Amino acid sequence: MAKARTQFVCQNCGTLHSRWAGKCEGCGEWNTIIEEDPTGGIGGGPTRAPKKGRPVALTTLSGEIEDAPRIETGISELDRVTGGGFVRGSALLVGGDPGIGKSTVLMQAAAALSRRKHRVIYVSGEEAIAQVRLRAQRLGAADSDVLLAAETNVEDILATLSEGKRPDLVIIDSIQTLWSDTADSAPGTVTQVRTGVQAMIRFAKQTGTAVVLVGHVTKEGQIAGPRVVEHMVDAVLYFEGDRGHHYRILRTVKNRFGPTDEIGVFEMSDRGLREVANPSELFLGERNEKSPGAAVFAGMEGTRPLLVEVQALVAPTSLGTPRRAVVGWDSARLSMILAVLEAHCGVRLGQHDDVYLNVAGGYRISEPAADLAVASALVSSLAGLALPADCVYFGEVSLSGAVRPVAHTAQRLKEAEKLGFSQAVLPSATTDLPKNGNGRWSEMESLPDLVARIAGSRRALQQSDEAE
Figure 1 (cartoon, helix red, strand yellow):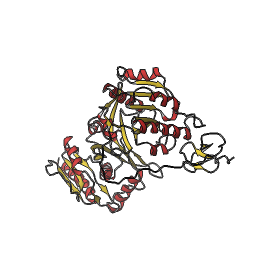
Figure 2 (cartoon, rainbow, N blue to C red; figure 1 turned 135 degrees about the horizontal axis):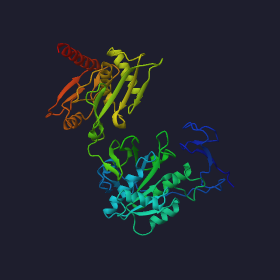
Figure 3 (cartoon, one colour; figure 1 turned 90 degrees about the horizontal axis):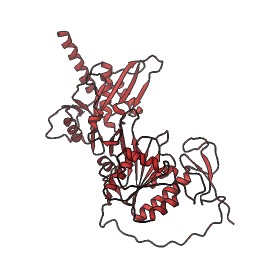
Figure 4 (cartoon, one colour; figure 1 turned 90 degrees about the vertical axis):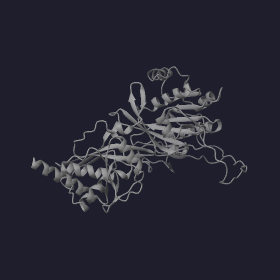
């Protein structure tokens, strides 16, 4: 009789430990380590001799390439994020905060595919059939032929899916509720989640069915359960948004069949999620053009140009240590911009001023091209002078104060011109400027040039006021 093998697994991050401990070394959480048997039983058991493998066929890198067959939903924003639709035989994970709209958009997609004569099965592990039907009626999807089931046992779900015609799309809501007879642990634990996801992925690869898994997000913004789930599936999508705003952003984190930097923008309404074809108009809809400390940033999300307002406020502090509050941007990058402004431009924002930075609409900027827009907003707020209302800003600022060029300049300027912006402040070393542009472009070599430009505008405004 072989010795029983056990392992200690953190139920929050999936880290393996050789022995029990009160605190997980991987994620730092307390009382999350549970003893589990890797064989699926209690106390281990006799080990089996390894089965002799069979040789597999080897091939070369050259050869015919076939595009992965896709199922288009007809929801353009969802198809954009997935790379053109759901890929047959793939597993896709959708994560997001509770109530953000995961089940809503998947129900709308299921109804759209069902109306296109695809066989769609929706398996709910958290809601009863009546609750799912109520949502379908509110979304106007009750007239579709989507098949429903309320089940959490993996074996029963697979047996149901294997009956009759092969489904084109299966939606599992959610992976935290799945449990299998082969794993001796509670539902929602690392072992159960891993076992359930492996079974669903195996079914997708064998049958060619597209499987969509819904995952909850923890307070740290990560999908609950083991991070290994993200490595198992073919694509990972995150739903982002603020309950205080009526729009939602679907962002691609991983995609084996398409780009990983695309976003889809939706607007939440009483009848579900509505597509937003032009997100720039949404983010700039409530803009105050005469307010100091506001700069319009021309950014890129994948292949889509996006204009968003960056707001800054510099105010005298009442505390011993000034505050640095950032919403929608990297706080470490804000500290770098403040240091460059003080070291190379003589702009003092150190010991006596609080600095608040906000990206309007709750949108989050991830590219360094926003450095120039942030610096412009900070200097504008400090000077108390509103920036030109028809001007956009983009460019990366280095530690030496130089303004470095960024990619996709032509697309950024084209989007700005389409929305009525006739001016742009951009790096001087930019090479991909549009040939037929109608706007006025101000090229900046360094950050002191930008500060001098804004200071010159202030002096000109003061002289005009004195003349009047």
